[in-house]
Length: 191
Length: 292
Image (cartoon, rainbow over all chains, first blue to last red; front, side, top):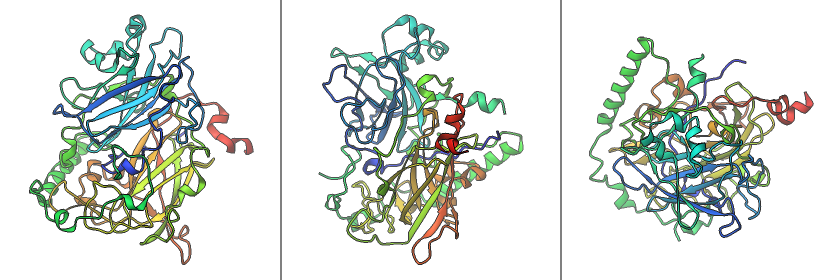
């Protein structure tokens, strides 16, 4: 099949706030329900300042590691886990999701949450991953993590909070810049 | 409570948005001392360097540059390290599923969300969402948002002195058909002034958000209208340095789509990056595959 050239992305701009957020957008599970955890973090710019106009999406398998293909993310019934959520950061740059710890999609694989990041001033969306901090063996064997030097690798691994939740900060630029992913390189190299 | 990006869940109460502050907002702010000529010179220099690189055999760029200083807000918000190559794994090879439980059919008509008709030029925007192999992306979510005919957004951060339209919110959604098609009825948005530099105006545009079959195909972009005189002046449009790539964001006027005495028609197809998944035949042809 002939390859078509992809349409370019553009910044999400400053005014997504009345369009993209929706009721319970960040609640993949009802807060307080069995197995639910809080995933939180702060989005920073290259000056180290928290930014108030970023919006994140997460997409993850369920606690058993199954990829869910169920509708209902936009009109949540409070019971159906769809695996996808969206959270705009608040004035202090903090985002919060209620979700479950993702399970490994294959035996021995390191579980992670896939993330897409959008912001005013960010020309195109960025992709990254949030790995759970447990299971050192799986993390060490992970193809992506093992291809990174230790300092950069740590930007993709969440901290476990005392209440069982996860904290993971995102840095768009700077010394501790989050690792962002490119899924296209191999394909374009083969053209 | 005001409509707010940060607090904000979608609300359609007309009263929530404060009136514009004509005098305060109209006066150029002290920060905006750079002129369009300053910015245009920067944009041109980047464009010329790109043209030279192309001539020397560099491959054409198809996406915006993350590091594009003429858009001032990007300076501290672009990664300085190159993106790290990863092979997409499991979850990344699928997308969330959306359906008619999520989106009502009427959400694709932005002109019927209030009691009266919105002001402005009624338009139909339709096209197809395709993946990099030309396969239609069926049953997926498309979201749009835009300014009204006067160039004003319903958002408290937009304070420029153009009127709000009590009959226009500027938000729509739809689910693509089996052939990847989408269709919105809306109002042509106005050009919109912003504070990147003195006398900065965005070309008229509609924000689009799309999902593919793989999460790695997720895209948010902007659709423009043909022939806009603001194209050469706009740092956001020009952040895509390749003219062919920029053209991919411009809809085509389609008189066949224009509806007599009702609405002008624009056509715009969106191509996502290639799917990395190994497709079964049923997946590849979706619902339409059953009929072929």
